[in-house]
Length: 444
Image (cartoon, rainbow, N blue to C red; front, side):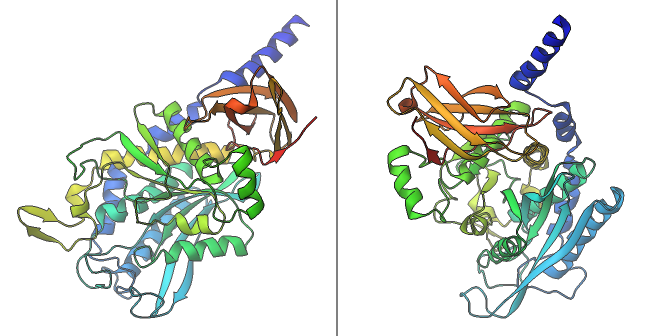
């Protein structure tokens, strides 16, 4: 009996305190800067990848680029026993829908789906953009190598597929090349609609847009800082949800913000040398990225990118002016840094795809009481649950308690007024779901 009790204590203690999984360290080590360099070089070598550029040539234009990307995904699939479903998803965008679409164009995305073993209809997506541009957004013939913006993010998605396809995960992972970003985020909009039409349960979208530059226009050089942009609450929330936030909080606790915190936590646990910066904004000031159409559709989505941008290398004609070299050239990409940010994505996706679904109908109580109370509906595959809490001014979940395989719990001595709370499901191997902020209130 003593041995049995000791083993049980060890088991539950492991679930509560275990911080790392050796497989995620293997994934980090397997990401290759040399493969990223090769892929970024190839993508930049297509001359231009403008959305309206040549689709017939095999050596120049967006058509050649997307066929090469699909071929890379196909080769990866062959090497893993046809574990990837590779296909094109496309939508016709008509001339004049905005001032950047000056002729009818098929916006074609390249998709590779690695189906989950237990939850095949739950998807975590890593996206990069295929297209590039110069100063004039309608110039689809001039050289536009787009080495950092965004061959780096696209190469990251391909490299993540090479690494993660060697493993099996309970949920599905999508490696996605999106087109039409520079012309109005059309690829993301089209694929978000595709996901909704096919009733996909999307865990989250990790949009990688510029993950290869370490030298900022402000003079800062850093190969460790990176930004995670996330909106505070979904634009699809109801008026009732907005009113509830006024009284109970949640202004910075929407589904995209929880996804951002998940990436932050995974990075700090497995790659402590990195400095993930949680940016409380949908995107850079007045600018946009391909996670936004997914947010617009009600899905969790974030942007992962370099911290220190160099604007002389973005959306620029290639030229020398006043002693400054303009253009998004291969020579400005730091491949070791792109490796680090690709690894950030890979371990976050591996962890999420290995975790059970989150709890549902999470409710909180404890008004005018000295304790915080919680109720939730259990998730399939969860062996237990973890309660998280933080100061109301803290950006991250700083405190937690594993409470076992229960559907309600009371945190004694924790006053509900002073903290924000959330609940995560825990799987048999310790992987956790995204934290769920309470959506209901109860009184005893």
